[in-house]
Image (cartoon, rainbow over all chains, first blue to last red; front, side, top):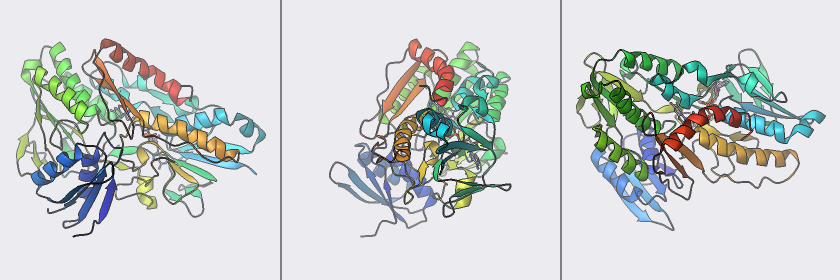
Length: 77
Length: 379
Ligand SMILES: Cc1cc2nc3c(=O)[nH]c(=O)nc-3n(C[C@H](O)[C@H](O)[C@H](O)COP(=O)(O)OP(=O)(O)OC[C@H]3O[C@@H](n4cnc5c(N)ncnc54)[C@H](O)[C@@H]3O)c2cc1C
């Protein structure tokens, strides 16, 4: 599996929220970079894949860890 | 030996922390064992949430400005100078004129909209995130005769709720002026709903639907064509406007970028509980300047200042620093020019908006005045 280039620890982020942290990181990342988000906001497991699909990025995994989710995307464009 | 505590940035966070420190450490300051100094680049202190009221011609800009010296307690030193570099190795702040050594540094340099972040944007956009912007938008609205107003935003930006507020206030403003039927209001948001926090999104969407405000989601700006007056989005579509109000992605202060101590956008890696800069024992970071994944808001700065002051007082007195910041944020949400809602949350508790009321609007108005007491460290 591709190794995360950057891990965004967005646990505790409800507003602006983990997806917003990811969008910020995605803007700064290069095409091909893998970004991993840690989130304890239940909505993230749905929001992040939905946004990634819409923007044409690949979702690598959505995993539940102890009390939080680990979600990774690969920037495609 | 005097312990020099230097606070860089005289905004909400810096002013509050300096005043609270001076009050708590009065005996030490009198004895000369501690010095608290604010270093900031201007002697004027703006209350930024006031800009919203300027836009709708409810209050003049002058109502939201004070002199920084007048806000600071006499025990706090003030230096007005623009710092160009922070030298963590030699423990000093550097300006073209002088060097300012410190023993303990508190960085509170804020965040700023970057109108250059989207090609073409700066040429046509109006804004309400800067004092000049608020006045310019006010003047434009007073002579507006109709057309499509588009609200566009990018992340990160301070006060995540302000774009929703300005949208709802625009609706009310044009209704009062009996122009609402000639104005199309289009609100946009980067993700799949109208606000990142689901409870705020649900509340705002209900308001938008009831009031005929259009909204577009997954709206990720790529460029603006100033000549044709269209916004181009990542999915390849074009969105025409007559008046564009933008809240572009923010950056940390220039001095952070210059000093190479922040991330790519100039936000400083900060411990979410102790508020220390990562890897530094003598440097703390407060307010918008941190890279913490929470709202950049005055209330955040305020709750952080409370925790930091306790720890700094313990530090001065040789005690361990045991107080931890829990991520607390609170925000008022203006629903119109007459009623408002309120939310509070922290690292462990998601936000839930309170029912809107005139009382909450009145309280937000009161807070415009109370702010000066919190900045003085009295509340
Ligand atoms: C329109 C609008 C509405 C808002 N509404 C709300 C609201 O309803 N509720 C809420 O909680 N928050 C709100 N906010 C956000 C709030 O104003 C900010 O989050 C808050 O001011 C952050 O405080 P700060 O001290 O981190 O930064 P600031 O208050 O911006 O202060 C930064 C300071 O650093 C100084 N500085 C920067 N660089 C240098 C340098 N190189 N040398 C010396 N000094 C320097 C600046 O002069 C400034 O004084 C709003 C903001 C806007 C724009």
